[in-house]
Amino acid sequence: MEGNKLQRQAACMRNALFDQGYLDEQFIQLEDLQDEANPNFVEEVVKLFYSDSARFIRNIDLTLNNSPSDFVKLDNIMHQFKGSSSSIGAKKVKQRCTQFQEYCNIGNFEGCMRTFQEVKQEHAALKKKIESYLQVARQAR
Image (cartoon, rainbow, N blue to C red; front, side, top):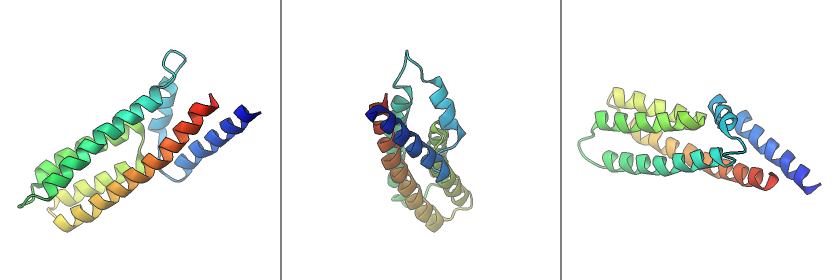
């Protein structure tokens, strides 16, 4: 009985991630790659994403704090971050990364700073939500 309740809870949490726009269809493709031989595949990919993205955020922070602003370098780092976000289906993070890149392309430092804060907020919000979901999903197995 408890297992069914956890499975329903995990399903509701997963659906909310999609309904609220945090994840897109790429996450479903990741889930399709998970099987009995690799039951923790999605969790491992998400952990790798957060490890990589922490490095990207750190590098962007450092580059933003240098004068004059190196918009080409910022765009390159954010491009990598956006690709990493796309690989797990992090829809809102990816959208903010795209906005950041648009500000880089026109050399708008204030826009970059503002949008970078939004990137970090969406990144943190997704991390909290997806970690909770993965924990319940693990318990439901």
